[in-house]
Length: 290
Length: 332
Image 1 (tube, each protein chain N blue to C red):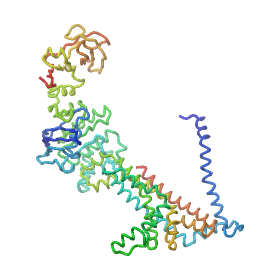
Image 2 (cartoon, chains in turn purple, red):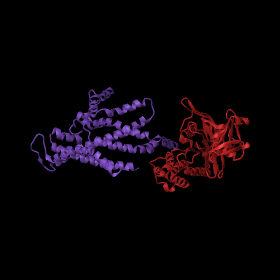
Image 3 (tube, each protein chain N blue to C red):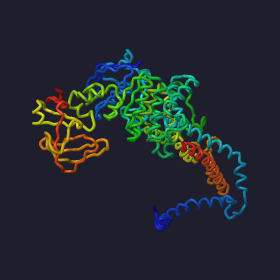
Image 4 (cartoon, each protein chain N blue to C red):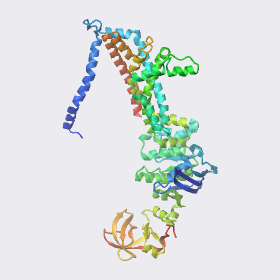
């Protein structure tokens, strides 16, 4: 189809964009890599020197690292669980014909447009606040002791906030998948004697499996780097209870001024993300083959 | 057993009546074809019998029991859909076994029934494949397999052959007819193709705009159409319908004569005309003749007859095979 010349021209024309994107990626990565091998503390300027893998050794043997790793996994896993299950249920509800469907769909999608800092602040001050919050008011009006969310269930509170933000995304993707399901298949199953639950389990769920993997993949990429919600609500606390890897690196660099250590942490995070991506891509590949 | 009776069955969507009112008797073991132009309500009628569409009025009685508001699965009918509606993520085996599994039968019984059905339909070598890896005809057979394992009281076919190419359609027509002779189960078959209706049916129900125009055996409809609509719909190529003076000569408003009942001659005859397009099928030749004062008349003659475009010919209809219709389109 394409001659040699057109292919060469195409490459030439594409190259500025590709080169720019490549530099955009490689320069920060190489600089981070370089910093991670230096003793580089902002409180002691002028003492930078090459110290090999010492930064990595400190970061990886820091007890805070394992806590943060656990928190990161909990945060990703918990949010995925809520958004995928909630998304499937919401998608099924929204797929039914009912009055005001358009407005309800718009409302369901709305949280996705609220920026993370704002939504976290709204949750913190208007919903989960132990004195002024809506949840506290509900608890009190039933005669219960209000829950101090960020003190008693800090990580769960963060998971709730993040899940609220990502639920619309999951719902939207799963709803489109649901709408592409062939109506005659459902009717055929109805004639074959399958009840509503069997139809869901044998037809709807397998049909949505590809969309579910896409939701899991995309959300995981973004959820590994949740930061704003933690910064404006708990600041990683109490103690280390809501510190994830991203927040730990931020604390290392900008609270302890240890650029070298934070860079090492950054590289570790990149490696961890790649390990997760590797398994996810395999999972997706398996699903796409079918 | 599978006798189905429709009593004053009607259907309307909102204020538009799709099916005004229909009475129909289907005897056990019969092959009934609903035929009509698209939008005549034949598919809706089938879906109402299946239970996929609610009735607006009337009753559906299956084997003496009123099933008008029963769930589809409770009616004991199987349906083959136009799109086949196979479950794409299940193997052929899984597809055929699905209704049995939903019925809660044990594994050994399911296995035997699926293998039997696969044997009847020549699917034994494809049981592990998924629907996506099958050809159109094979998918069609899987859909039929899924229908027969339930041993239903009746089969419902919703234009099952319309997605197949012409050659395959001919084959599947024979296979379905064969299947009907083997199983001797009632079959209701919906199509817009009158060839399918003529070749397969014991009884044809011609529908138009939600009304039954005529019910009868294929030859009955062919020989004695009750009205102009049936006359024009059944038979290929279409019956020639002539209006005006020539019809008035026979005391009719519309005069019908089938292309095979018009004799063509190069020397003498009742009507004079010029040859238009000629279609050579080998066994037959269809000649479209422009007759002065009558319009276009199609003639069917033997395969050896040859004419040229623009040549003058004479046509003579066989007087005994003329169909006469009154002003309301009813046969006289």
